[in-house]
Length: 353
Ligand code: DOR
Ligand code: ZN
Image (cartoon, rainbow, N blue to C red):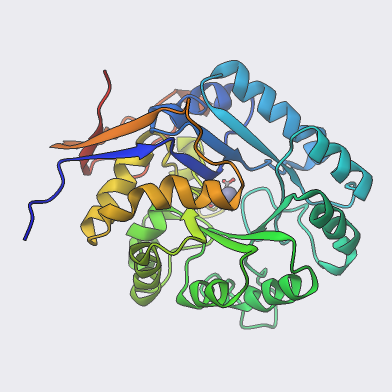
C-alpha cells in the first residue's frame, strides 16, 4: 500500500453556492471565501423581503467585489413574480449566471418564495434560451394536516425536479445541497443538464449531530447515516454532475445561540473560512482525497462552463499538525459569527507563501 498523500494541489477552487450577505456582515464574511481557499463564489441572492427585485444580484456583486476583488463572483437572481422573461434576457447579457428558487417558507428568508412552478414556465423558457442555470432549493414546505417535515421534505420535492427536467430538458438545473440517497439517485437518473451540489457539512453530519446542537442546524437538515453514506459514495465515485456548493451561511451568534422558548434558531452553517481544508479532511476520512479537485473545481466549473484557465492559480494543501478551529469566531456584536468545526481539529492546511 502506498503512503497517504502529504500534499494535494487543486486548480482554482470554486464554491458553487455561498451566502455573502450585505452591509456589515458582508465586510466580515466576504474575505473568508479566499481565506478558505476559493477563487470563485457562486453567490446566492439573499431573498430579504424588501430586496426582492432583480438588482439585488448586482448589489451583492458590487459589495463583494469592493471588499475582495481577488475572487470571481457569479451572481444569481431570486425567482419571484417581479421577474420577467425580458429581465432574464437583460440579466444574462449583464453576466448574471442563474436564478435561485426557494419554495415558500422552507428556510431562512424564504417567506417570499414560490408556491407553484407552472407560473414561471415563461421564465424557464427564457432561461433555457439564454443558457442561465436554475438553482433549486429542493424541499417542500411543511403544511398542517400533512406528514411533511424536515426529514422527508427533500424526497417529497424530487417529483418537481423530474417534472421540470422533463418539461425543460435543455435548461441546466442544479439541485442544491442534496442530503438524501433518494436525491442522489434521482439526479443520477436524469440527463446531463441536471447537476447537484453537496455541502461540506452534509458530508460530516447526520440527524444526531443537529438534534440538540443549534450550530449544526441548517436547511435542509442532515439526514440518516445511510443518506450521508450516499453523499460520500457519489463523491468517491467522482460523478461529474456532483460538485461542492458549501451553502456557507453566516448568522450572528445571537441568532444561533438563542435560549428563549419563543425564538427558534436560525438555519445555516458557516464553513467559508475553513472550507478547502475541511473538504480535504472529509474526503480523506472516507478515502476519496483523489477526488478533491474534481469535487471542488473541475466538475462544477464544467457544468457552469467556467473552466480553469491558464492564468488561474492553484491552491496547495498540506497534511499538517492538527489544529483546533477557534471557538471565538470572527466579528463582533451583530456580525459575530462562529464557523463550523469550531473547537475541533483540522489536519489539512493551505500552504500560504
Ligand atoms: O440553512 C440554510 N441557511 N439554508 C438555506 O437554504 C439558506 C441559508 C441562509 O441563507 O442562512
Ligand atoms: Zn443556500
